[in-house]
Image (cartoon, rainbow, N blue to C red; front, side, top):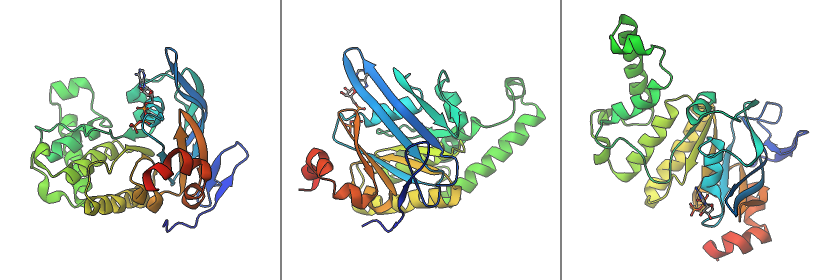
Length: 279
Ligand SMILES: Nc1ncnc2c1ncn2[C@@H]1O[C@H](COP(=O)(O)OP(=O)(O)OP(=O)(O)O)[C@@H](O)[C@H]1O
């Protein structure tokens, strides 16, 4: 059961926002998004609005188009049609790293860490994105470089401390247990200071206690970093437990949007997805 009793409010520009976010500019506003791969329409007529501090779930059967939506939101794929606004700014024509700088960070279905590097160096990779020194000061190791590098190490240690990984600073990323690798990947994404964090199946391969810990981590991220989270997940205990809004995708189209209770009881969703998983 979700502990959130939040109602979703429809707002004048279309879409729904939570009580908490309804008077603020949404962090994500997607209109009529679609992409075709040759003759295959993978996503079509996709509309989604996410409030600044909302945790939203994107669920649906395998092959429904969920990861494709993430690839569209980060401009890995250019949409065939439709528009995406991040904090009111269009992402059209931007490169993936520019979308990251606009405030969108993501993790992947298959963990992508620098497994040979230490835990702290993995976090610092994320932080380097936002560091201020230029190429010359980096290559020549000018004073500004060392100042920024020190700040970067301090920030990485802070992040690791928040997620109870301070004692693993020098461990090799690839040697960590699965759950900790997932957490590290999330931390690396957070290091870029996103306003919207996209998590692609963060609980995949986790045991129940790791999933419970992850649920808590996601909640803390929203609360302590004051950001929004959009997550793709098949683990319904996690989705129903922390999401305020849920969108259900089937064959590339949203078939339902609502609170966990609305989604759980929606006959179309039960037919297309939940019935098959839980029935
Ligand atoms: N680059 C691509 N070229 C061609 N087809 C693609 C490409 N990327 C995705 N697709 C197709 O788009 C559809 C949606 O795939 P997608 O991976 O987004 O689904 P999904 O909902 O994330 O599935 P899962 O839950 O299994 O991860 C599939 O039919 C897939 O084969």
